[in-house]
Image 1 (tube, rainbow, N blue to C red):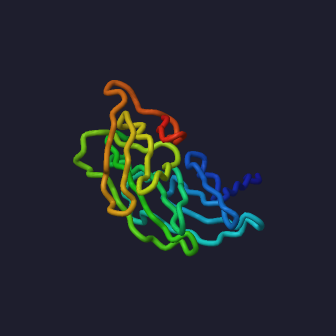
Image 2 (cartoon, rainbow, N blue to C red):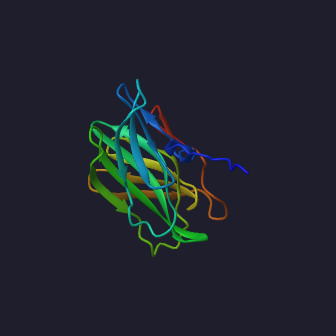
Image 3 (cartoon, one colour):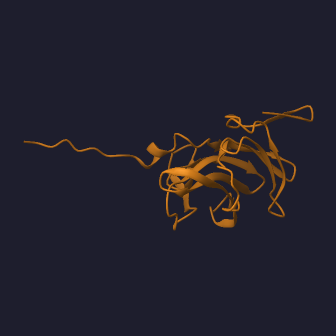
Length: 173
């Protein structure tokens, strides 16, 4: 009897990550903690970076934002195999080479189930993103790498499943 063979493309795992694009590349991230830049004309891989090679559990990259010569990737690091508590991860990559400029992870002792949703929004110095698991919105300073503010929208329910938007000086979630 013949057995069917299946093959998967490396892009099959990008369904949760919000991509970003410029005139040179499509930037995608995976649930396997990788970020890639793909040539917009040919689809060829320009660079690929493993953001968490020692990830003990599931490290899902949720979205990408671009600012200047930097690619920002927001992700979630599950602390336990079955879910439960998780931490937020952020990485800044060189837009041309994919080299890691810096990485940050929220404090694992934080009692929230922190999980960013969607693409971070770049607002001046800040990366603003929905914290679906934590029930709110977080603003992270991309230059000094600190949380500037965190707003809980609902203590009883999950946070917004949307990427924040900015219009006329107001932040919409």
